[in-house]
Length: 241
Image (cartoon, rainbow, N blue to C red):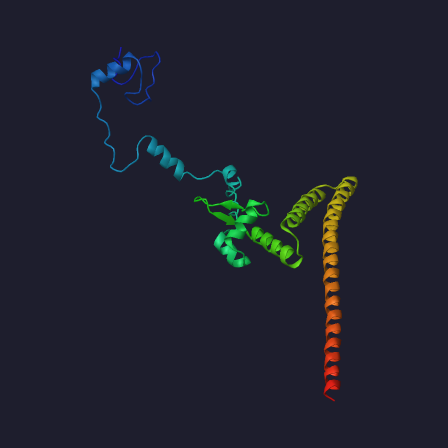
């Protein structure tokens, strides 16, 4: 009977084609004991090993036809456009220069509720927007040109704010019945504004009539004085003659 050669197993579970050192069990350990541990092949410098080799292999492999038919990954969505910078605001000195009002007058309008600054700075300074400046110019026009009092101006501006809110409600609905109700509400606000102007015009008409009467009285007195002056001159000439 031939003895079993080192590195080979007997009939039970043998695998002669397997390399040395890969078998498990007592036969493998016995073989290592008989032949000694084989020296490991030195690794070439710079060659990737283990997981690095797997990564290098995956990078260098060619794509399969199914992978090549896959659509290219879509590019990331474009970032939304940057929001516009905040509207410019002015400090009270610049507002006073633009409107011709004093800082004291602007503060007084704020105290009585005619004006409200849009915001305040970190230091507590009043900051006014273009809409605030336009409101101040409107107040000036109503006070100087129309001759309205500050209380009347406050009433008119409040009515305009109400009408602006009514317009927003009108645009927000498509129901004809609701739109007609909103129009009726707007008509009522406008009627109150017109009544205020009519009262003011009536008062102005009365004041104008009073001034006109005074002018007529002055003209009548002037005529009387002119006649007296003429009579005096005539009497003096008769006395001399």
